[in-house]
Every structure is written in C-alpha cells, then in structure tokens.
Length: 273
Image (cartoon, rainbow, N blue to C red; front, side, top):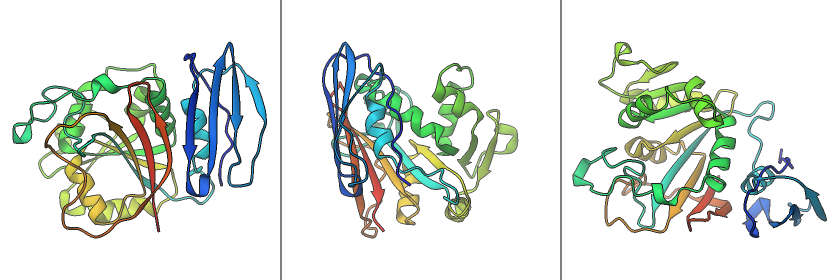
C-alpha cells in the first residue's frame, strides 16, 4: 500500500522541492508565502491533486509521507533500515562527537554536527522512528547511546528510543552491564540468524544507526532492506565505512531524496529484488 498522508509543519519561507523516482515517480513542491501552498505531481498515476492550501509547518514530511511505503500494513514483516550520516567519500565514523570513535587514529569526530537540519532531517528521523519496532546496534554505538538518551524525554525520537525494544551485538557485554531497558544481547555469531528471524516476523522497521562493522555484516548477508543515507558535503580522507569490500553485487533503487538547508542530501534507497 502507498500512503497519501497529511503534510505537516514548515517554518521556512523559501520554496522546497523534492523528486521521487521509480515506482514513486512524481514531483512535490512546497511554496511558502504566508499560508503554505502544496502542489503534487502524479504519483504512479494513482493520485493527482491541484493546489492545496493548508497551515502546515514541515515540508520534509511531504516528501516522506507521500512516497513512503506503509510497512505497517496488515501482514507486513519487519524490514531492516540502515540510517547513516555519511561523508562524500563514504565515511560514517564518529559523526556526532570528538571522542565517539577514535579507532585508527580518526581525528574528525563530530564532523556531521554542522550539517544537521532539524526541519528536514529531524522530521524524517522522527517519522521513521514512529514506524520502527526495534533498535539494533553494535556495542560501541549502543554504549554511547545508553549514556546519552535515558536522561532525555519530551521529543518524539527520545521518547521512542527509550521505550523501544533494543538489541545490542556484543561478545563481551553481560546482562549485568545493561542499564538501558528493554535490551537483548546478541552474540556476534548469532547476528545473521537473529536478524533473519526478526525479518520474518510481523512489524515495522528494525532501525539501525552507526554500528559500521555490524552493518557490513548485514549487507554481506543481504539482510538490508532500506538505506537512508544523509550525504554531507565534506571529504574526510579515510575512516570506517558501512560497505563490505570484495563482497557480492547488491543493487538498490533510489526512491527519494531531500535537500537540507545545510547542503546535505537525505537519500532513501530500497533493495532492488
């Protein structure tokens, strides 16, 4: 089922435009001038609308909700969604803080913060979280998250991440180490089978961020259904990537993209099967 959801929220006073390809072909423009005028192109020849006027504040969600496949349809099984902040040269290491991950002598921790757009990126991430039934992370990303999120509340993402079922992949953590609940520990040798079993169950997304080495394993096992890559205009010259080397050819289809005010591109790819 494809959704034609409501558009919400936009504090900006400039035009916004997104284009969707493939099965979701269509162009979506938001023209802000006092009220918000929204013009939709054809959506797979199923929905055509003229100009609509509505007092709505976030045009990023027009892009998302009008082309997003509703994975919560009856009978839909869980899907693995990888969300990453990525440099132009494919690095995902330590986007949020200086000491987040210094492996390999990485010196540029926190490089992504300057490119965050709370309207475009924040709206999309909140919407994705609301459709996710699990959070899956590697040990380092999980421990960083467990130190940062439990004391936060009152926004959609914080409330979701603190209550959602969490899975952490680790060969060293024990139940006594876990203070962020609910959390289930997965041993490294069990990762592929556990994710395959989850994907056979009814539900929403298995949400992943960070965890570069774990994502490489999932890609190599062809267990990734969607990639949401926020590609930011910076070259880091080396660091961890999510892409395995010397593996199989894994085709994806670009189904949508949104441009943030900072110059970053939020690109959604779906596994082409």
